[in-house]
Image 1 (cartoon, helix red, strand yellow):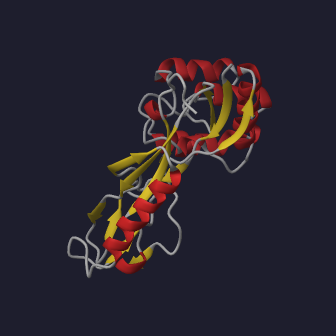
Image 2 (cartoon, rainbow, N blue to C red):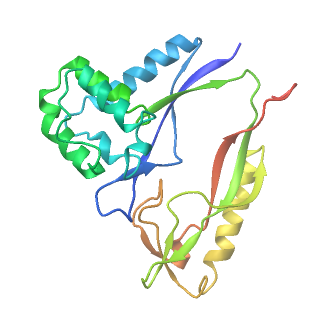
Length: 236
């Protein structure tokens, strides 16, 4: 029988937005394992509801600069759904920007009833903080060694891409992946420079540890990412 995991969804700051926007990041952790799908969904809903209940939370600051990134509802049905819940959206019409919606939410959020808040959460169905993942009985884990991408951004240091990287190798044994990763990092850190630079900035990189601005000898250029491999008969 499969099991059902509740896994977190990470949101990270989008550094190129003029507003404090966040986009979905690659990091995730298992916060619960359940025998049935119904149990997992209930636990997942509770995690999402807890995040939405925070008075300081504004869902229009997640996902992107338009409603497309926050809801599968087109604008018209989206507004109709909120109006059916008794919410006044007359001040945010077809020409409203995402910033207008964020201001609308901040203004009216203190007046929302629980059913109204639930309606907004349902309409903004792409803004979630947890999801349910079905895990078959036999799922092999893979450990991918990937190289971080670095780019120049008019600074004296190279900036790490917010997420992802270049595939180097995949292992079934975590120890082997860690050893290869450490070997690659040591070789790169021993150089005088990389792409002509000797300082590197990981600010904005998902999961990056502080301090973000480091010399080449203290910078991680490779990392290990755990992934689920396709289940196969006889997998350990």
